[in-house]
Image 1 (cartoon, one colour):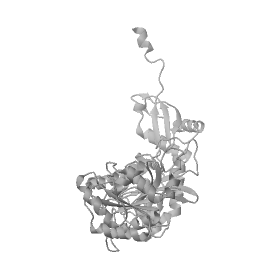
Image 2: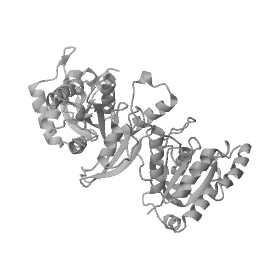
Image 3: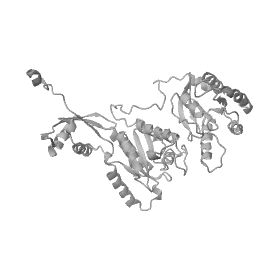
Image 4: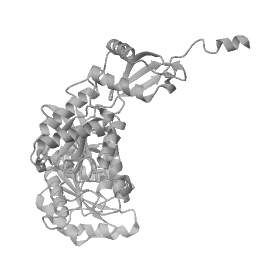
Length: 472
C-alpha cells in the first residue's frame, strides 16, 4: 500500500504546482493569487521509481475560528494527520517569513516525518532563502523549482530517506495497467453489457451556494469538503471514492457555475473549466437546485448543458428542510421539471436536505437507476417491430410533394442511447417527426430521464448515375 505525503506551507509558495509535477498532470488549479487551493485533494503520484499518494492542501493561515481561512486551516491539519510524511514548503525567493516559523512549529508538534523544501530557486536571489530555511530546525532544505522541474531527483532521495521502509515497499509495487487511478474514462466507450457492480462516476454540479459540498459531506458521513455560508468556496473539482450499498461510487465536487457574463476573473474561469471537464468525464451528473429559489435561468442552462453533453442527469432540490408546504411544492417542482426540461423527458427529480440527510438514499437510487437506463441496449428485432407500428400509426410527411420513406433502425451506441435511422432524404426529415420517434422510443422501451440521439442516414443507391453514363 502506498504511503501518503502531504504538501503544506503558507499560501502561494507553490504547493499546487509541485502537486501537479508529482502527479504528472495539471489537475490542481494554479494562479498567482494566494489562497487558490481550499479543499484537500489526494491523487497517486510518481517521482522517478518512487510511488505514493500526494495530498494538496490549502495554505496555512493564522485566522479566527469562524472564518473561511480557519476552516481551510482545519482541512490542512486533517491532511497532516492523515499523512505518513509531510513536505513543508517555503518560498525561497520571498525569503523566510514569521508565518513560516509559526507553521513549522505546528508541523513539528504533529510528530510526522518532515521533508523541508525551498521552492522557486530558479532565480539567483533565492540562495539566501535556502540558507535561511536551516533556521526552521526541520533538517536540510531541498532546493527545487516546481514550475521548471529542477531538484526533483534530490527531492526523491530526501523523501525516500525520510520514509524509510515505506518507500522501499512503494518502490517494489508494479502498476498492472500503466495508468494512474483517476485517469479520465473514454466518454464514448462501448460497454459489452451493463455491469451492476462497476464503479460509477458521479459529478455534483449547480449554482454557487446550492449546497453541493454539504451534500457530499452528508453522503460520505465526514467533513471532507470545505463548506460555509460564503458563495463560491469550492474552486477545484475534488474527487472522493465511496461505497453505497456495496456499489463503488466516485463523487466529484465542483465549483458553482454562474452566468457566463458574470464570470470575469481568470481564477473563476479556471474553476468553471474544471467543472465542465468533470461533467464531460462523469457518467451521472447530479444537478443541485436550491429548493427555496429553483429554476433560475442559470439552473436551466446548466441542466441543458448536461443533457447536450449526453450525461445521465438527476435533478435534486436541496434545502428541503426550509420548505413548509412540501407536498404541493414537490408537485409544482416536478411539473416544472417536465415542462422546462423536455430534452430528457421523465427526468428524475428528488427533494433532499443535505443538512438533515433526508432523501439522500432516494437520490442515490435515482442516480443508479438513471445510470442503468443510460447504458440500456434495445435488440434490433423489437426495435424494428416498434418502428413499423410507429410509422404505420403516423407515417412520415411528404416534403416537396414526395413522401419520405423510413426503412429500418438499429442502436449504434449506449451512454447515452444512440440510434441510426435509415431513411430517404435525411436532410428533409422534419425535426417534429424525429421528436415523435424519440418520444415513442421512451414509451416503448422505458428510456426515460436520459438523452436519446437519433442519426439519420440513407443507404447508397448502386444504380445512381448509371443512366447518365449511358447517355454520355
